[in-house]
Length: 459
Image (cartoon, one colour):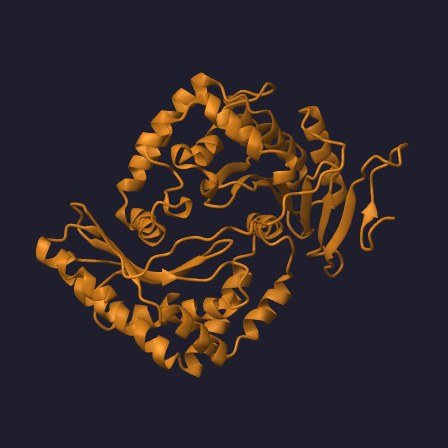
C-alpha cells in the first residue's frame, strides 16, 4: 500500500521492486513556491521549489558529510574531496567541467561546512539539463587520480595560507577551537598544513566511497523548473554513471550529533603582527533543532545584528572603538555557539571587551526593551524574505532543510514563527545563553601586559 500523501511514480513488473515516492511538501499559489520531494528506490532524495517568474535555475547536491566526520588524521579530507570532484571524471576532464558551464554563462561552485558539503550550478532555465548532467557526473564519477591529488594539494595549502593571512576570518576558527578543543567541531574545515600534506589519494577515495552513497545525498533545485523533469534527468544521470540503485534503501536520517565537550572561561591568544586585534567573545549557543532558536535569532539581531543594535551603537557609534562589531550564532546537530566579534586597535582591546561583556551581562540580567525586540523582529522578518530573492538561496534553503531537519517550512511559516516570539521568550533565552561564563579568542600583536589582562573579560 502506498503511504498516504505519496504517489508511486516508478513502473515495474515486479511487485517486490522498490518504487519512487513523490510528495508535495509545500503547496504554493498557482504553482509558485510549490516544494515537492521524490525519494528514489536507492534512497536518493530530490527536492524542488518552483518559481515560474524567473528565467534561471539553481541545481545542487548536498552530501551528509562535513569536517565533523573526520578523524584527526583525516582533518581536511572533506574539503580536499570538494576540490577533487572538480578535477575530472571518466566522461569529462576538469576543463570540460568548467567550460561546459562557462559556455552557457552559468556559475558553478561548492562549499564545505562542519556538517555538510554542497555542490551547485546556477544557469538559465533552458540549460538546467546540462547543469544536472555535469554536477551529477562530478558527484558520482570522480576519478580522484593521484596526480590530481598532488596538484590540488598545492592549491589547498595556498587557501590555508590565505585564510591565515586574514585574521578577521581566522579568529573564528580559533574561537571554535577555544570552545570545543581537540574535537571535530573544534578543528578547521580546511585542515592544517600537516594533515593536508599527509592525505593520500587512497585515503581520500575510501572517504569518498563511504560518504557519497546516494542514501547520503540530497538533490535540490529551484527556479523555473518542472519537478518531474528534474527527477527523470537526475535519475538518468545517476544511471549513466552506474550510481543508481533500484533496491529499496532508506535515506540517512538527519544528524543527531553526539555529546560535545564545551568549555567556559577559556582564553586563547594567537600573537600576530597585525594592525588590529581581532576578538571573539562568546559562549555555548543552541542546537539547530532547539525550538528556542527563533528567540535566539531575535536576541542576536537586537544585540549585534545591525546598525541599530546595542553593540554597534555602544562600541562604534558612541565611542568609535571599532569599525566592525557584530554578534552571530552557529547551530549544529547537538550544540551551538553564540559569539561577539570586534576588530580594533590593540590599545583599545580591553575597552572593547569590557563594553561587550557589560552589554552581555546587562541583557542577561535585565533583558531587552520591548522596542528593541519589536525592531529586531521586523528586521529579522525582512532580512529572511530578502535573503530568499534568488534561486540560489531557495536551493540552499530546501536542500539544507531536507538534509538537516528532514522537513520543509514555508516562508510564511518562518515569518509566523519569528513574529510569534515574545519579549519573555527573548529574555528567557538571554538569561540561559548570555548568563553563561564566556570564553575568548584573540588574534593580534598584544604585549605581555595586555595579554595578561585578557582573563578579566571572562572572569
